[in-house]
Length: 263
Image 1 (cartoon, rainbow, N blue to C red):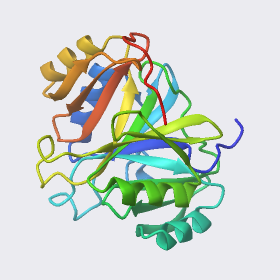
Image 2: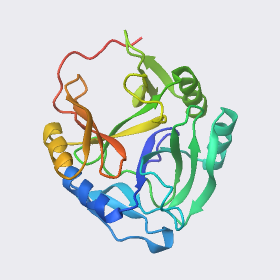
Image 3: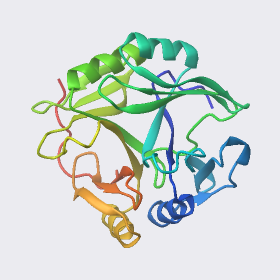
Image 4: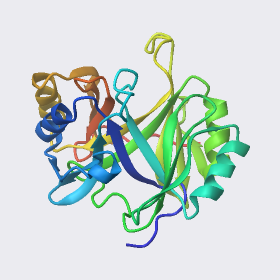
């Protein structure tokens, strides 16, 4: 696989106090299976759909079980994680984990943008990232949810060189590289997001049937936050898993309405 351009979403993982519970939930909702836990890497466990790597789950580090909150983390590709880390700092972001080597798999850092969104950067080695995208069970899309859109826009365009377009008539941006849409940016409003909910990056996973995925999630202890709703991009819904991690599902084949105008 050719290396992904800098700024391309390339991987996602999440920390769960109850890893076995998370495996059961996402196995039911997204059809994932799981590999062996890598004990030398904190029991990091990869998820697969149809034998292709799509994500990973991991327990908290020893001693952090009571403080850690479950959340999905999106990683952006980089040809040089140390150089990207410097750009993050220069643009007003904060490094939460300095660049580090992960065996022969690659190198990574964790960071926070100036509005509070946490994300990762991944420089591929043996592990190149998603092996399945845009299909059922795989990564489909992501959105930066922030209360400070101008600050977020400036940060991501500065660090990753994104171009951006706004959907006409609403404050929603689409970031792209070379015309390829990569992530969106959504504004968190007071009526929809209580102040205790921090800025975050919402990860979307593909499903064959959005309504069925929501029903399965609710039966398995999850909760619907929004939707299902039709759109020109697909039928989608926002969910919380039983441990409080936010994610979204989308059936991109079921599209309703005309594509919005961009400006």
